[in-house]
Image 1 (cartoon, rainbow, N blue to C red):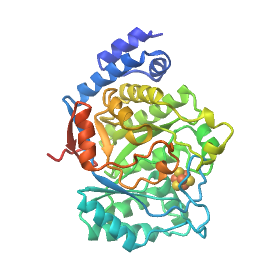
Image 2 (tube, protein in one colour):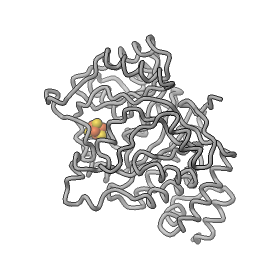
Image 3 (cartoon, helix red, strand yellow):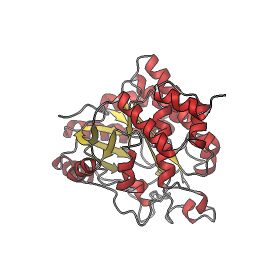
Length: 370
Ligand code: SF4
């Protein structure tokens, strides 16, 4: 069996490491050594000093959701609840126009699983957005695609094809959380299982849509379950790339947020959940080393703060994410001490510069806008 030194050596040579080796790194690797190895892997794949970022706006078109995830403080189950909403066209138009004025190149459209919305709602919305605005549309994570399947009876392929024809360019990677069905049954039993998330992403990649891979740590999962999540992503990426499909263009992880707006945060077991900055950085580094086929790795600054986000740039990340204008889902469950959920483009650039890197604006496909 390989020793830690053997695995360090393999990583230094940029050789693929097995799931078992990644687990040993995770359990016993020295954090600073992991950071150095992950950084040199990043330099191997994306040489230089550039760190990319995106200007975008998140729009949550509805907060009505039938999934009742125990880590969510954003949704309202009952459509008649006084705080339930579905945004009107006028409200969406105003939000998109504001974003374009601030230089946004992408709209991220995500929402709850609202049984009152037919499939035509989504197609009409994308068609209108595409015809009205000159902006990239990344919309609907796999669990929302599954919701459209439930209300329409149509296949994932049909749904994705119709949305793509209407002007959708890609899918956000939300809803993956942890791709382990024991964890999912415990924390979000009504939400899609890991196989559905992977299946929707696989079809999206075959159709040429842009996709990202995400990971949330801190559900009280084991390290084996974390590695298993990464293995599922790497396997799908291998398969997609071998068939000439687009594959995930980036990976991003963050720790679970579970303030008192969420049932996990109100649980007597709440201390068992979440992850601190050191665990997050360890996850960032091991993910960079194990996910050798996903080129871009994004630092997450909103959940643990800007300083930890900057550190992640030294632990293998080459991207600082986006302006996150109007993030509502993770922030509703976020630490009350953490109130920085969005940044202006100027702030993003200055933070990246401050961390010792050169900021460069990109689009969802990671094409630099220079
Ligand atoms: S996390 Fe998403 S799917 Fe789960 S309850 Fe919240 S809005 Fe619904």
